[in-house]
Length: 175
Image (cartoon, rainbow, N blue to C red):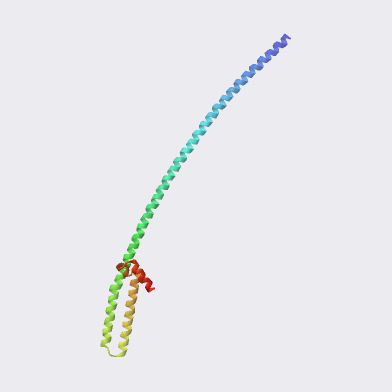
């Protein structure tokens, strides 16, 4: 019995020894798993911070580029508006000049031609030549009227003399 009891006690000691060794291995594995988890968490945190930092830098760069493009578009829009306004001014000045030129130069020349034809008609007494001169005078009269109409359509002198309202009233009255 004593020998059996000693064998059981030796067995219990061996089992307890193995249990302590297994507990020590388990504690070591648990500590190693905790260290691995901390390293993994730290690496994940660093990677996450790196991604966040890269994203913020990319967003900031993209925002700067977008702002620069927007500013360039605004400058271009402003330049285009100025150019358009200048173009309209040049067109108006050209119309004004052309209108005056037509009215003054061509109109006066045609009026002088009409007067010369009328004087020539007064000096002529024969009917065929006088009829031709009358047709020429009528043609000159119609040409003077056409030149006046073109001049008025290009730039009514009322616009410069009396303003937009008077020019519009005159235009509506003619319509």
